[in-house]
Amino acid sequence: MTEQSASAGAVLVVGGGISGLTAALEAAEVGNDVFLVEKNPYMGGRVAQLNQYFPKLCPPSCGLEINFKRVKANRKIRVYTLTEVKSVSGSAGSYEVTCETSPRYVNNNCTGCGACAEVCADERDDDFNFGMSKTKAVYRPHEMSFPMKYVLDKAACSADTLEKVKAACKYEAIDTDMKSESFTLQVGSIVWATGWNPYDPTNMDNLKYNESDAIITNMQMERLAAPNGPTGGQILRPGDNKEPESFGFVQCAGSRDENHLEYCSYICCMATMKQITYIRERYPEVPIYVFYIDLRTPGKYEKFREKLMSDENTHFIKGKVADIIPEDDGVTMVAENAVTGDKVHQKVDLCVLATGMEPAIKSQAAGLGIDVDSNGFVVSDPAKGMISAGCAKKAADVVTSAQSATAAALKAIQAAK
Image (cartoon, rainbow, N blue to C red; front, top):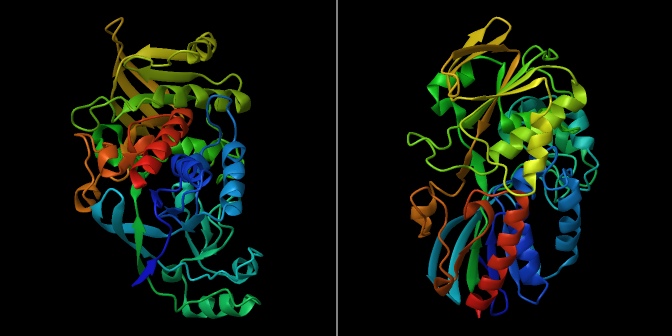
C-alpha cells in the first residue's frame, strides 16, 4: 500500500460528477491540494448521461468540457478514476483515507486512437446506455469521456481477443496484468459528492418494468434522445426499434411512497416536461399522457410547464398509476382519475417511468463512518471536516448541485486547516 503526500490543508473530494468537479476546482483554485476520486472510469457522473439539462436545456458538453479543461490544467488536483474509498480514520484536519483503484488494463500510454477497439471481436453491455446497446470489450465510455483513455473489460474478452488487442496497440498501452492497488491519503477534510442512482424500477412490481420493452425509465429516455445514445438521438422503442405513436409518463415512480422513497425527488416533474420537448421535436402530433399526483415546477419553470400543458395533444391526468399491463404492441396504463373518479385504461406504445433519485452512498455510509439521514443523504458536519454536496446531500437539479458544491468547497477549506 502506498501513501500519497500533499501539503497541509489537502481536501479529498469523493465523486467526479458535476458536484465533485465543482468542489475540487473551487478548492484547488484558491491553493489547496485536492484529491478527486471517482468509482467510474470517467468523470462527469449523471450529467454526462443526459441529453439536455436545465435551466438552458444545454447538452452535457456545455458544462462538463470547460470543467475537464480546468481540471487538466490545474496541478493542484490529482484525479483517480476506478477508485473507491474503503476506510476513513482520524478527525478534522488529519484524516487518513484508504482507497482502492481497480485495474483499467489500459495504462497512461493510451492516446485514445481506438486501434484496440477496431480489432476487438468481443462485446459487453453498455452500462452508460443502461444496457440498451453494446460496446466492444475494449472501449471508451463515451465520446466526451475524461480522462480520454480506453478501458478493457477483461472478463468479456476471450484469450484470442486479448492477444489481438495487445498486438494492435503500438504504444504498449494494454496491460492485462494490472492489479488492484490500495493507497492512503492524508487530508484535512472530505467532500462527499457521491451523487445519485436512479431508483430501481424492478422494486415496483405493479409497474412491470422487466415484463415489456415498451417500459423504460426517464434516464433511459435521456439516452434515447441523446445524439451519442444507442439510437443516435432517435426515440425508438427498445426491442423492436419502432417509432412510437403514443407515449405515457408515470410520475413519482417510487418517490413519495413509504414503501420505496418517502421523499419527493425534486427533479422528476421537470425531467418529464423536458422529455416532452424531446418527443415534440421528433413527433409533433403524437398523443402524450402524463399521470401525476401533483406537478412541482417551481419558480421560473412554471411558464415552461404552462406552455407544454397548452398542447392539445399532451394530456395530464391527475391520478397515480396502479398497474401497467403489457400488451403485444405496447402497454396499458391503469389509474383512477382523482378529479372525475373514473378508472382510466390508457394504451401507449412507449411508457416512461419517472423514477426518483436515491443517494449512491446509502449502502456504504455506515461502514465509512458517514452520518446520513433517514433517507440515506449525507449530513454535513463542518466541525468534523465531513461535508456533503450535490445529490449526496439532497435530491437536486444540476444548478442547485453546483451551488451546493461551491459552498461545500468553502467549508472544506476551512475545516482542513
